[in-house]
Image (cartoon, rainbow, N blue to C red; front, side, top):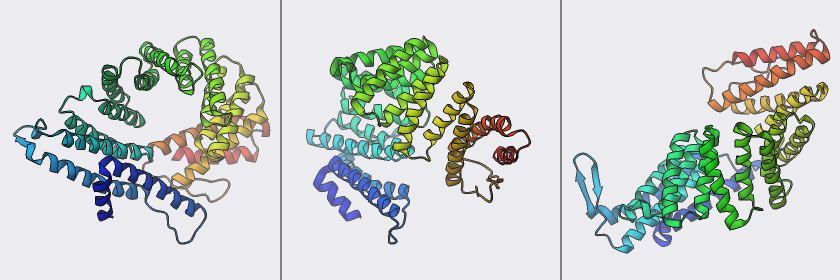
Length: 418
């Protein structure tokens, strides 16, 4: 409500109002979701995106109104570059208000990113960076706060698959953090870790290892090696060695990371499951299939416990377990894993694809949409892989002319059509 938002900004200041607003929006959405899950008749689902964006837009409006009032007498119009704001004559109090408004835009951007609205997140970060640059009179290289926003911009770019842009933002953040905080600060390690992980995914092995080793050095300096942040970095170093170095050495990194995470986070933490999964993949590479299956099973247990039975990561784990069971010629068990993975994927697709309808056991998908979202395309591709693994096993176990083979082929045909 406009009057409430305006009063909140005036009383709490820009960043205080933004922080309160983010907290309120999180709690409101949680309560609504909880009451919907409880089937309370008087609660209707809301459009989360519209609700969140509209709420934050009001805060942005009044925060920028404050900053515009501060700078309106210091703005000159340049023919080529548009409006140029000269903040050299502003008081320290006015500059502090600009910085506070920048913090507010950063907080809202981070909240939007948490809800998956990465485009809007980036717009708020850009506004935050602009205000922070004004607050330090253009000397952004001395602003730790600006480095925080640049770091988050890198993370946001990574989330939308723009790795080169992400690395550029990380480099800018890193330069400021080293200059202002020194080589051994934990925020330097944070940026180095994220940059190293991106370089690892881009197969820039030497650069990635250099970043990760330095991140690990700093984290061990502050926390000792028995810390989950060190385990995170060691796991990425293991990933890098798996792809570009010695898989046996990589396994040592994974084992060490797993032990730390189990000790610090407990055996049922989702991060433990992710490390177990990566360890299992590496054990596959080393052809230690019995051990990899044990790791996959424990990862599956945790993922089902934390994420629920019907989840993409659960389906991924079952698919990998099916592959391992096939290699060791445990065909009945393998087919069971593939069938469960198929069932989960079909359920996920039917929820996400409104054109998909179930009519009977032999024909699941009946329509052929003109286009599909990239995430749905990925789901269909994974489903096809499951079918392609399950088909030869079904023929082997039931016979090539069995009705189960016919049903599987029908379902595969409809998925291929999509």
